[in-house]
Image (cartoon, rainbow, N blue to C red; front, side, top):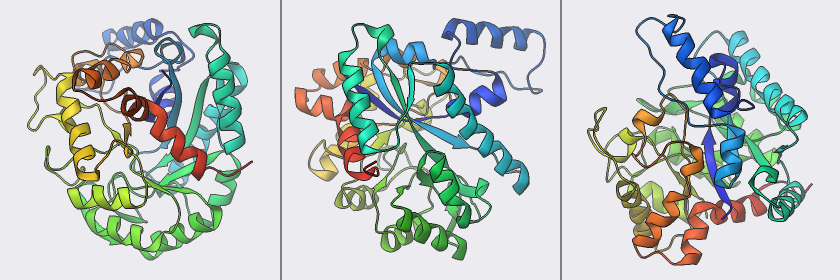
Length: 348
């Protein structure tokens, strides 16, 4: 089964934490354990166990990943330099690992899917990356966006927390004038809007003012876990009306309300969010995966079944146990994202 994961912070982890996905997962963990033992991590912080590497993607059949460009709030020149370095990392990754491909058009997506289907074994499967900007503060102005699009960026999420473009998680607020200018530029460039992390007010303003394709790369259901990080039923309906896909986040705190470290979380708990999206929208068409694996959490904060990203297909088994059809399962595991990209990416 071709699996799509619509949210992984690959470049951030590689450049800031030496979690270079060209390493084996065992090597990434070994290096990190050595740094922790040597006291090289930030005071009071111990990283959770990593889940992601290229070889694990291949082993699990994760064919396509939305790979993020993400920077924490810092001075503008530092954020911009970090973002450009992350885009450069993805290009270097594709140049140095023949199994990694940047996917930025419908034509390249078709070629990629053909090559993936023709692979004789897991080790020959390519891993495709679609570049996604999470939190647009690293863009100094919307005028820079065409250059970043030329470098492969296809999806933009204006917010993380509050940014100069929009209110965000934990920081209510509207689109700013710069945010409206950003959306106009995105419309002109036929880019994809990621509504994840947008504050309620900015979410509705963005849907009203942006005419292009829309997604929520990694967002769960507010009806099941309260808080502005998650989507209300009205937001889910509005996204479905735009034929969006919503990626389920696989962080325990986003799956079970009041979760505490060590509390068991099962795949059945994940399926509750899938069920809710399907019930609100009337079908499985708008549901996908946006794991956010290694996005500030690891094995310790993911459902018990997961030991690495290669275990994502276990969700398919859980969906089958809950009565989902084969077609529904294929859609949720990746087909819905592939259908969306086949319509939303530029032709060439």
